[in-house]
Image (cartoon, rainbow, N blue to C red; front, side, top):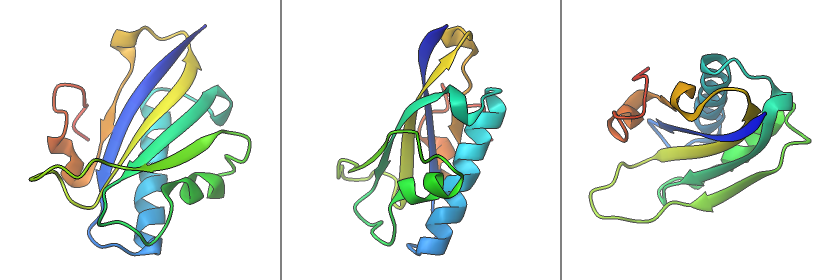
Length: 122
């Protein structure tokens, strides 16, 4: 069994806590489904959010899914001119037998433009 990193991102339409919750739950669910994972496979998750998002912590959405024993942390994304606004990114570390090449990275909504080379463009 190896530890693999899975990337993902989503873009919010507005900075509201309910919308943040919906989009992060959708992203986490899509990452888990695309990679055939369960919560017990997750080692940790690092979330970043752009500076224009301040209504809620992305990790709160993960906790609402019962991820109470998974280490989660939130950080601020770098403020680079021209970068995608209202974006939440994640890097999930998981235990899996998948090779790096078999990992599916998930980018939703406007975030599909971030890494078309990695994404299944969902």
